[in-house]
Figure 1 (cartoon, rainbow, N blue to C red):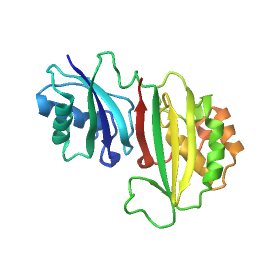
Figure 2 (spheres, one colour):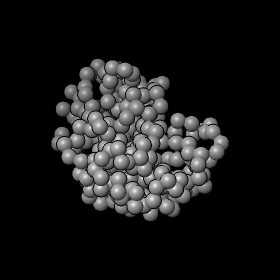
Figure 3 (cartoon, rainbow, N blue to C red):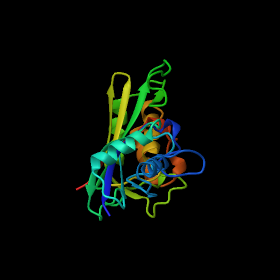
Figure 4 (cartoon, helix red, strand yellow):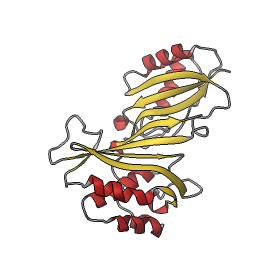
Length: 246
């Protein structure tokens, strides 16, 4: 059976997240239904990351098998045709070894969080970024972010419903930079806990407004207590940008 890897872009505003759920359409459901409409095969695809409702992707990756042999370009074009009008696009399709797993073969995942820091409401970026009206000090946020880089117990920055067996993760990158009124926060790691990026962004925003100092963020990390961290940033500012493989 031929195995395929697809790279996916989606706007998460009208989706309940990556995983199939009973309360609305998901990315997984749309793609699986597109595969069925294309070739009549019922398959279950595996994604590299289970993004939450409202979260977007520029480079999500998934894999699946088909009983019939189809050229990758044909698969990609057919899925894009059958995915309409959902805000989901297949950017690339390649045939891979049967051992490949979008989830377990991943070597690194990269996320971007977008904050628009201004008083005026959002129009073009509504639902695509977090509007923060209070002035944010991006340099202070970037300096504070350094305390989270490395291997730590991130209990303070995980969701209560997180199913990971261990709260220990190695955060390889966490940077904050400003481009005009937009602040971009980038995070990279082999894997993340549920809500980890949004929780870190919410805590960094407190540093940006001056409510917290770098030492407060370090104390929240050391506490290993979710109540000590800041609030979760909204999901709609978060993007899964890329997944790395060998």
